[in-house]
Length: 320
Figure: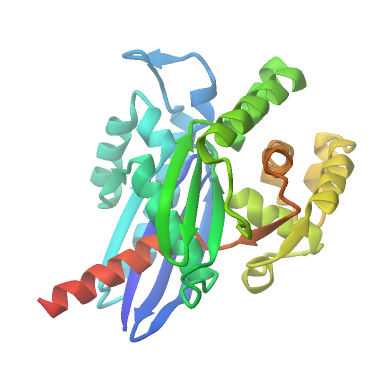
């Protein structure tokens, strides 16, 4: 078995995963870190460079601080078999994304890749399907949403095979910015547009398809439903919630002022208090559009997919 590291520089948070994989064992977590930096926050505002919006300096610095710390953690593991650091929609879209990637390399030694949404979907699907142990049933069909801060990827799988995927340039950080600047009506229109576009891209779902959501919104909705005082990966992962219960959660949270949401809801991190409502609304509208009655939270996704992919590449290299 080898030890690998992955970094997911997302639009809302930066995640580090160090894990062991190989010898028939899909993945064993050794260390997991998450730091909220809202890298995509500036992309909701009309500050442009070369026709594109920019990452804000304060968010870049928060992200850089997290990456410096993650670099030190990774360096503490001797004999690491592989490491990959990726960036998603924030770095794909930003006018100063390449500049930030260069600065990360100079200041931390980390080579950060701004991966395509196709690669993001491939790796996320791998992390979810292996993490949900779907390999034993090659006919098991899933509809996966990876809800990020700046984009949302959708995936259709059978067993461990990714059949189709796509991406929409909308995520919870962007949606929170729309609600804050333009109001709830604009937010509802944006989510309706997303749901209609998703329906055109995916409909109809094969009978028996299981709906799975991954990302921070997925973990948070499970933690709230379970009233967790602190993060528990083993119980959040695979937690199933019905549409009616999820709609009730949304109604309850929407009645609370933002500050009360920040400090009085078990399972809700203070930094996600303004993001959870757009995220829940996105899931609920999707379920309503497709007639889905239940959603399963996956606490594995892109970071795990990166490591599983690294392990597969290493095995293939050793066979040659």
